[in-house]
Length: 358
Image 1 (tube, rainbow, N blue to C red):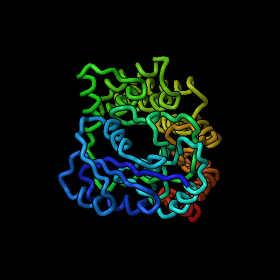
Image 2 (tube, rainbow, N blue to C red):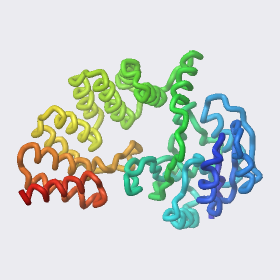
Image 3 (cartoon, one colour):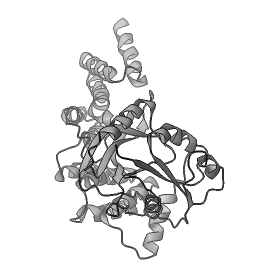
Image 4 (cartoon, rainbow, N blue to C red):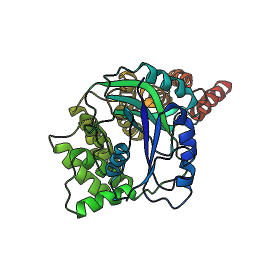
């Protein structure tokens, strides 16, 4: 059975760290903690779990810190988690089973990463991340922010999920400042980092600059298809934020020049037409979203609700606006089958019941 080193970089995580380590400590063979300057009780807390605690100067580079943590690992595989991640109890047996059955020639295990949840706690946003990585110099982190180890060698995909459950808000300006510092130091952003830089600008409502950065990324021959498609979505939202509706729509449609339409983009196009009062066009795009296959293994971000619940709920709205109450109610019931606890579904259900009593 392979051995696993859990490698973490932490700073001022006294609120999260015990919850994280409690969820996984008994399943790994070694815990390596790299502290980058905590001033709270983080180091004191982690000392209850491991003696492998190292201090490392923070230089605004996540890859630098993660690679340092990997350098201290002594087991067959390195595993990373953030302090506000947890391995839910429902995943722990699967984790152990995979560890017991893992083929020795495996280089990397990709696991799901749940980063957003609906009102019932069901994951609503997820994607695969490299989670167990063979402990060797060939695998090292790249990128000062949104760091990654490019998958290579024998890679397997597991449905085991790590859940990201932050208890307090982080520093919303941190990533943007790191990118700005890199640029001030005359560093060139490679395509993936350029995409994420544009995304950070969008989050900060610097729409015009975000469009400029993302357009450069979209026009460049390099860059991953999934990032290109996501960039079209972000760029479109920037145009919408500037009141440039036609440019926003054109950019959403442009995403299909890179690959077949994703349900996520279909829902965004449907939303555009719904807000314009063009219900027939909206229906077309929401129906298209329903018929698009969900590819969780593409590596891109997956909004699961865009493949059933959201288009069903919005089709209910469209048909209600067009006066077809029966079809609207049918779509609402289908949405309710996806999420019977949904407040929107329950509100619509009451709405249709009230209509019948009139």
